[in-house]
Each structure stands twice: as C-alpha cells, then as structure tokens.
Length: 485
Image (cartoon, rainbow, N blue to C red; front, side, top):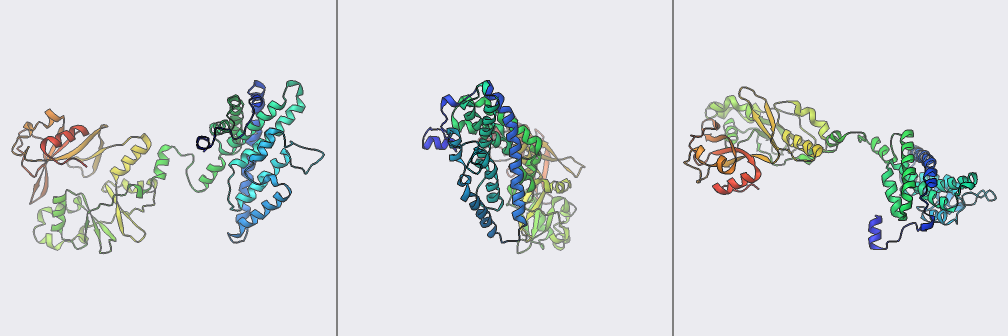
C-alpha cells in the first residue's frame, strides 16, 4: 500500500521525522531492547482485552444490529472527553513526534497525554471491534506502541539525563514503540521493521527498530502462543501449526480436483451394452445414474470380467447394470483431501464419485489426481504417475514417471500400418519406449500384446509408448497422428 501511495501521490514519508532526530546510536539500540519487551507485554494485554470485549458483547441478549450501536455509543462517550481516541491515531503520533502531546502532565491529570491515550485507546478499540463494528487493530496497536515508546523515553531522560538521552531518543523510541507493538500483535517482526521504515524512510532507525521488534515478538510469543490473527484462525479450526503437507491436505477441496467428464449408464443398461462400452471406450469405471442424474452406483471392469465371454448370450441380455453395480463412498465437493484420504485406502477404487447435497452426480476424483495434487502442493512441481497391474494381482499399483516423461497411446496410422513394430523407428528415431500394443477383439474386447519387434501393425490398433513430451509430439507429427491438446 505504501509503495503504491508513494508511486501515485508523492515520495514524502508518512511520518516526516527530521534526519537529525532519527537516532541510530548504540544507546538507542540498547534502549530499544527493554522497550521491545514492554511492547510485547502490552500487545498481549491488548489482545486479551479484545478477546474479553468480544466475549462480553457476544453474551449480551441483544439483536446483532444493536451491538455495534452500543459499541459506538461507548466509543462516543470516551471520545466526548478525549477526542484523540477517534480515528487511526495518525495525528496523535505526529503530535508525539513533534513534541506537541505531553507524555504526562501531573498538573492536569485528565488532559490528553501519552499515558492517557495508552490506557484509553485500547478500551475504545475493544468497544468498537468487540461489538462487531467496522475497524481494525493494526493502526491502534501502533498508536499504543507510540505512546509507550514516548513514555519510556521520558522515563529514561529523567533517570539517566547524564547519558545524553535527549529529544533524539524520544523521537526514536516513539517509532521503535510503534514497531514493537505491531510485532507483538502480529508475531511478525520483519514486517513491522519494513513497514515502519517505509513510513519514516530513515535508514538510521533500522537497527533500533529491529532490536525492539524482535524483543517484542519473542516476548509476545512467550506470553501467548498465537498472535491476534492466528488465534482467530485457530478458533475456526485452521491448523495454524501444521506443516506444508497437512496444510495442502486441509486447504485443498475435493471440488478443486473435480473431473466433470464421467461416463454414464442407466440402471437397466444390459451387460452386453456395458461390455461394449468398456471395450470401445477403454474405460475402467461406468457410473450408474437415474433420470435425475442421482448416483445409484458404479460398475467397474473387474465387476464384469466373468461375464465378458458370455455377454453376447442370454446373460448379456438378462443381467443389467443394477445387478452388478457396487455402491462406493460418495464424496462431498466441500470436503478437504484430509477428510477423504481414508476412502482411497480401498485398493479396488482408483476413483470415487462426487455428489451434491441431493445426491446428484457432479463428477469424479481419481487417486492419480489426489497424488498429483499433493506432489504439486508439497514439492512445488507436477507429477505424472502411471497405473499398472501385475498379472495375477488384482490390485493396481502406481509408478511415478521421471520428470518430463509421459505415457501415451499412438494410433496406428497409414504411415505405420503393415510395418513390423521393430521397423517403425519409434525407438531409433524418436527415443520412445514401446510398452505394449492394444488391439480390439469383438469377442473379448481390448487385448494387450506385449512388445514384439516382429509384430505386424494394422490400422485401428494403438501403440502404448513412454517418452519425453517433445519426442512424443515429434512422433505424432511424423506418423500423421493428431497433436495432443
């Protein structure tokens, strides 16, 4: 925000502190240490006051619209006597820096002073924010820190005037107090130092600011585990202390991975039609839905294997989808990955349906999508995983492909038809590894033939290959196959 303001308006600092008053001496840095500790304690007290105020207003048996009005009434009552509590505190901090606002006046106890604002500004902010009114705690926290810094400088002046702690230290500690209070509330000392430097544009203040902000942040963390902001997140169930893996699991929703393109069949679809769909479209799962698209179940290729050889006979006409379907767990699109991981422990399910509140099918999420998402979120790079099945083992297994590699099906075009597999040049010219040949059989559906250099290719077949993306693209262009979209 400050950078945008400087670019659009002017390069003038928010708080115009003369260079001569920006004290970066060793004395100022040493004074910033106890001030930072005090700011950390004040920040935690401010945080607790906001909590108590929010709880008190929440306990009132009043309509929601009345509570902010009551909070505004209390703030207005304070402001009638001390109007300095209004606003974000910019002018009051400027007056402190300029020496126009006293730290404390014993002759006028109720007159506006740094001490009085240090006590009243948090109360006014708690009444406003706790009641549900508009406003934040960012600038009020800095104002509280500024008043504490000014008072600390006044105490140091009186206790150690011989050390040369004059007006320079008062200006510096006011700024250091602002940064310390901000660091204590947010537990973010680097942010506090950077922000106050942007507001003053005085490099000499960086060292005392850093000392005060780090001391305040450490003190606040010692007294309270959470900052003002992380405390609210924790109350909403957000795993604040979680590592990147858990955050990825809890913050990624099933709806983010949803694939809406799903193959559908009706409950009364015959076994013969189901077998034809599996063979023709090379599918593993068909989703059974009614006329309202409500999910009834799924039919997997494994479910109909025993019927495939009989699908053209009586069984193919008598057995329908309703007879062979199974009912897996249906996922909620609002669920997180952490909520559904257990459902994917079942080895028979490589994908699961996603339904809305009425049970209508929205799409599906595959195990491969889930694993690839975790790979991307945690490691910061995409992952490609190939599924394979070992003969005699019904459970699918996954193999992570090397980075930049893909598996693909290349159609046998006229450029390849009639050639021996070893004469196609796929390996020699395009550096592709041939894994298998797929051919369709009207009796038993799709067949997979192991690599054989003497196998004669025919149009309509497919060659399963693995290689780099650029090599696959070049092979498609060479054989006249459509480019991958």
